[in-house]
Image (cartoon, rainbow, N blue to C red; front, side, top):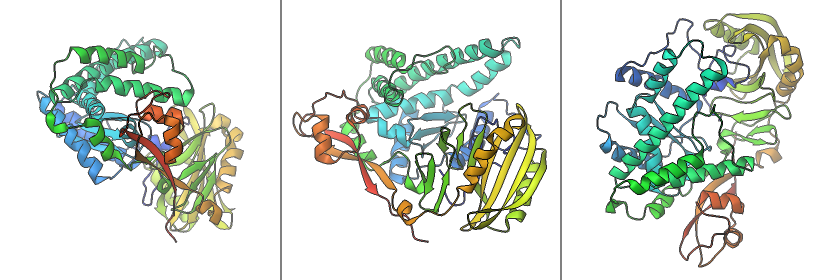
Length: 478
């Protein structure tokens, strides 16, 4: 998501043209790869990467939720035999249900995962899963396995071997997470019920369950749910009475959490991107895959061989001077050739455009970069593709740059914010009836999945039900 004062990597040409540059990290030419030999190596690498996570994905910055997740995390740590790291637990501002661990004990949970979970038991199992990854140094084990692999095991065979190893680690982390949760007084069955909900979200997105392949790094959600349910029934555990009603207390903690794209970070309307806070509009090519991150917003071609994206990390100024400074900074990282440099007008804004060439992992890359000074910032619209196909994508890149403009008053007031809210069900009430009574913005399928029930479920009186509430968003005045 784009915010004021954002920072983006400057090495636009070191990224594969199939990926948005927001997923890349700029690095000096001579930077050495960290070999994860010890706990110290894990902690050092985790500290470095955690800065990139905050810059590129963004943190939710909700003190109450942060404290809640941190409390559960540290309670689970009591079951870790040797606590080699200073663990940290944070919430990333991402709506996709996601959780991950960096080496050294940096644990991240997405706001989308918090919205999907239905009680503290499920959240504790997920956090325990990530603690297990860090505590058992799975990243170091993956690195060591790759180094030990037969150099002839490349292509499909090598990828399948690494994927199988990754699936084994996921199963190990599931087992470890359940054990940590049980030791802390949480129900280890929470791992199974959460995996079931996770699998159902996939059906909502693609319309059916996806069949796992040999190249998947994670076991299928169905397999994990079944295996974790069987294990939970075998584990001996005792509920911590201090936790009380783990569903009701959890739901009250996440009441009000943002759902979907937040207007403060900009929103897509079709393939147009509107940012009400920063007052701009930009339109990306039809049929391209769209992505909005904390540091850039953009789109990738259907074949995955080109990207066009909008970013900014420079103050407003003479666009030619900003372009030259950008190239100078880029050349500190990689070798770049300026093929063309000329003034252009975007709308009524005097701007500058450069054509750059450089070398990427897959060969020669060409980038068209347009520098647009607007509202205290120099915005960059960059199109990157292999040089051999640069002409094919030139028109789409230039059209994206030409589309940049201020929002109309109608566009500025057309954005809405969506929040998770709680509703109290009536005896025997159906999802459809509750939706009509409460103004729930979710359809029956989403309401069922996010509440861990089936579509034909009938609620008991007093049940707390997660619903979605949409409200108009008012951007700040300039």
